[in-house]
Amino acid sequence: MIEFVPRNGSPEAINCPAFVCDACRKQIAGEGNIVWALKVRDSETETAEQSPLYAAHKGACDQALEAWLMSQYDSQWVPLWEEIGTFLKQLVHNTGRDFSQDSKGQYQQLVIRHPASNPHSQVP
Ligand SMILES: [Zn+2]
Image: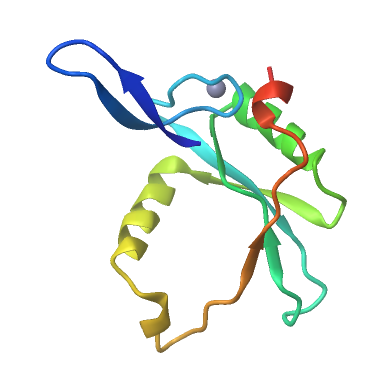
């Protein structure tokens, strides 16, 4: 997840925004993946559903996180990954864009379906 990590010390106590791995709970400094799940829709008219977005180190952490995430949803759901660097570039780009002003496409309604459990108590 993106979190504010509290820090004390010189010159002041601050809260530092960071990606924290949802598997091992350590900071992701360098390569990592955004991991989430998406429900495969039967038709374009069905409302899109996805899980919240999670973050993990590449390798054992994102594999453990994906295994936990897929245990939270039925077989209509699929896991998706994106590198954090790519995600950040898209996020910065979209922060300055108003989706309602996009003349080339329409943005659809999306439901965020939260899992029944907390990944921090289930993933080592
Ligand atoms: Zn990790």
